[in-house]
Length: 364
Ligand SMILES: [Zn+2]
Image (cartoon, rainbow, N blue to C red; front, side, top):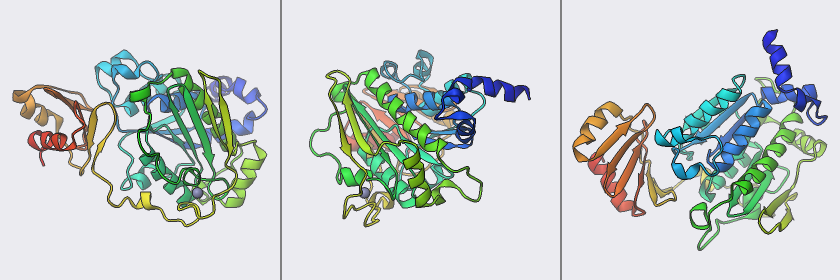
């Protein structure tokens, strides 16, 4: 009873808002939302939705906290960066500190075709906190295949853009962008980023998420949302003012635009032809550049015993580890190893050099 009273008080200002109400708050408590990527946008989304009382938040992120993240990644602090904590773990700790009544499930993993099924199991809504089109196309394929709603969000420089994808109803990401952008793509590494652009796009996306979740029919274990019918999705969208445009704005120039996205594009590979090439994941490289002068290696799962690896690497450089990551400095490289054998090697964009470093010290 005491806990119920406390819960009522915690959300009282949100329940007063007529778009949410008591019934809406209960739906939020029953909702299961995945946030893929917990950098700047993911942090802001997770913070807003945890405070709003989303019952289960699954935070999926492959990276660890660094000092250059602190300007905009609002869930992390200097201690997280000093310990190189995985972002999913650091995020879960922060969220639990201000809302212990919700379930936060941190997943320190790179979302790939081989694990997407397991990582998104039982989820009602997917939110995009990633920084790359490869992962977004994978999310789009999965969501369209399962008729699961997802919200695309991106920010770079002072520019932010977001789109609600309601499979079966609105355009999907591949309707609007059939291929990845070609040529030089602006990234936070090349163009910088304003934290206010991030928070704006996260606020818009989080609000769309709330609208979608409060209008969802009450779910039971037998009627999980990915089996939710098309008609129900349509009804939800119509009832709750869900946006059906690609919305973009520039917080510096104040320019903004909306492009209609309420119709599916005839011939769209994903939502019309249902050809899910990104979900099939054929020919996907196991070694990828991941910004910031870094290479990620995720060739196969190989559980790593950090204590033993620490001893083995001692003669070759500086080694440090905690429960979540092992760091190895071997000039000019900095290798961060995760318990499943995945590695991020900083100090190079040469995949061959990164692979040989990994093979030499971790094993081929
Ligand atoms: Zn489409």
